[in-house]
Image 1: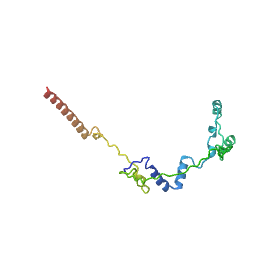
Image 2: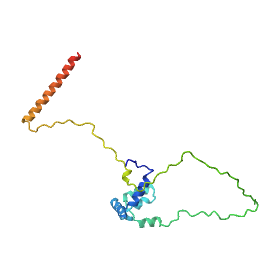
Image 3: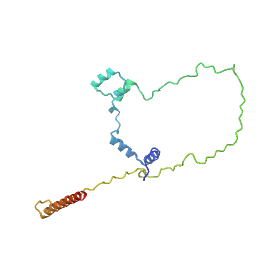
Image 4: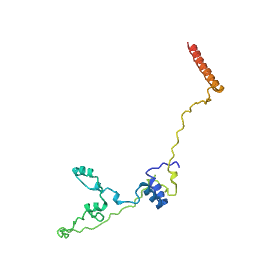
Length: 190
């Protein structure tokens, strides 16, 4: 707990999830999204065809879907298409070059043993996070506390009750006391 999920540790979290996930969970996820079972004829392949702008306006009126087989008949079978034929670069090449033959003696230059010592390591050693739960990485944000508390006074519901009359009289007395205090303060200032 307390660690923030970043792009540096998301891979280890995802690995833990993938190791513990079951195929039934994946299938149920696709069922929930509406992607299972996959119906290849549910896709509108007319949007995959390249057309001119004038033809698009006409096709909008029809709004006709075509199936995968019809799409393959228009485009052709795309399962084993070679994208680009390899370029034959070795045709008509004269490999023998007898005019310019030279021999070169290969030599090596002696090198001294070079030891490079760094005072600080250049990389840090991270511990793998394989056996930790995902809750250790997710951060729960604190809930905002109320900044003020409302001062509410509960009064009796019946207007004719003595408690209600007493609470009204108490409020009027408090109001009069506050007014008297403000008047006294004004007199002292003057």
